[in-house]
Image (cartoon, rainbow over all chains, first blue to last red; front, side, top):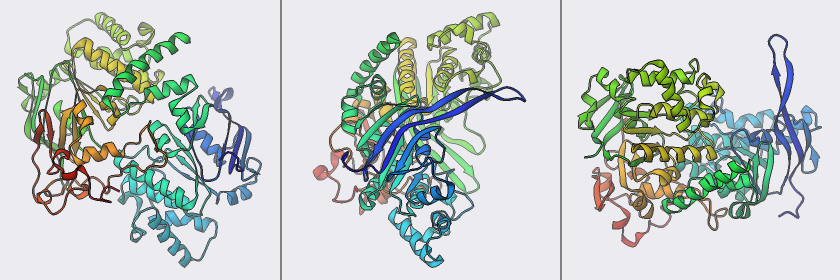
Length: 288
Length: 338
């Protein structure tokens, strides 16, 4: 997988947010280094899981990849094209190839738009097809994500979280992108619904040859979706490698601590894990 | 005698759209020093159960329409509000999911801890302050004495949840109800808060009811588990027996739907999704509430008659016409679970 030309290449990515202080006259006092030198590559058809705790910079990394946030420095190459120096119009064209699925299906869909309009909007923005063609395409997309196409004239509030996330996925698929950044796509959903959406994402990847940058805080969810996994802490990648290897033989102390903290649905194994993680926590506390 | 005994509790919400049967006939008991886990998905009634126990449901629209909550021989549902206030906070304490919103941002944490102590005990402020420092030390907040004068925004999420636990423990309660206490926290912080809760339970010989959607969390902390679905208990057993031999098709499906962290073929495999979604509690299915999503239902009693909660083996209760132990061949019909 590594021998192919990568679809996405991120090199030494930095994103700093200024911290301002002062009343009336604000001045910059320091920077928060949300992303602090991140490098990775993504091959076509692959899923890279990006896992970390809140504030680790994983979502910011995702936004910088799509240029939804402008990186402070570093390079993002998509199929060899450098994105950070592209103009507005050129970038807009590139976005056909790269889409995003957001965490919260409650706030990421415009409540005043119908399901059909939400899914069809990217087609209008990019001037694709006639009105009639778009109608056909919208129904097709909804069908692909397992959403009843006869509900195109309904509004998002009429649907549950899982159904809304299907709408969000259909919208992301509208332009037939190659890369989808999934930013915590199931963390707002119940377990039984979460499984439906994860299965859907796997099926779509297989059928449409999609490449995913899969961002999540849930280590088990990331494991089930990813070929390779990158662990992020304080803006940096502390470990990256094949999923199996990172989880069974973690090299970095932070990865170890993170994995040992995950509660697993097995009471017997949990007893040992609890003892192990207490030990690890003490060791880390003394090491500092 | 059990410390807390809930018998056939029914809490309904009377709304314009109709009567929502949020909690619909729940019974369980908790013993001193034990941890009971109540697990279920959103809307199953687990939080309303907790709020009903300590009389914090919003009335109206909600009302406890029947059942008893016996705490130390006293039925809390019939207690007058001012008497209940003496129990709440002192005998039974509760911590909530969101440590960001459950502390008052305009009061120092010292004030918030001591107000509980002084509500229940007639002690001077100075002594209450001293107790507050001890409590903060007990929940492992560094430099406790200095931090008494700090406002909640100076604390991180995990630290705020520790402050909430300190407040809950301030009157040495006999029962602690924790409603999704770690859901808003990062996984490493969750681990330390769960360890802390477990240590405190042992030291204070408290009973704990922990409410969560996370099967991993109950596997970790609970002695016994109650699985709720659509306002009812569908399965009840000791933690080991529940995970070793789940009986209810819903519990089984829920465990199958969880992504695993270790094992083979995780990336290639599919999760066992449960088709459909939980029922509308204004008009739930007339018989078994899980029947419309159940791979084993159809053509028999469970679509006509509500199954009773019955004991399939010692201490293991299940509300289903098709528990695992009674299923021929032990397998779902082909394709039914996809």
